[in-house]
Length: 73
Ligand SMILES: [Zn+2]
Image (cartoon, protein in one colour):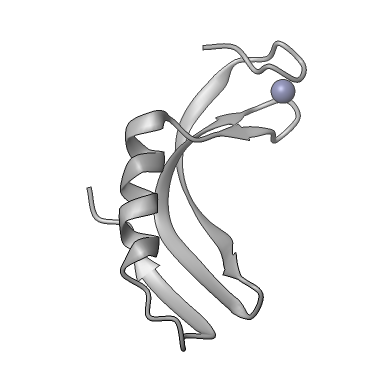
């Protein structure tokens, strides 16, 4: 796959990304498999991974301000 930003090659990497799910809630997902551009650092999350992220974020309680999760494959 090519980077939509610069046309560079995308590489599979594991990274940690923060997701803001509500006004005061942030979830950090660790070891997330993403496709990252070696050239410009733009990244892309594949659909099956995004679905699993959504499922994980749905389980976060509404009183949580900060949660750190391990993305397990
Ligand atoms: Zn790029």
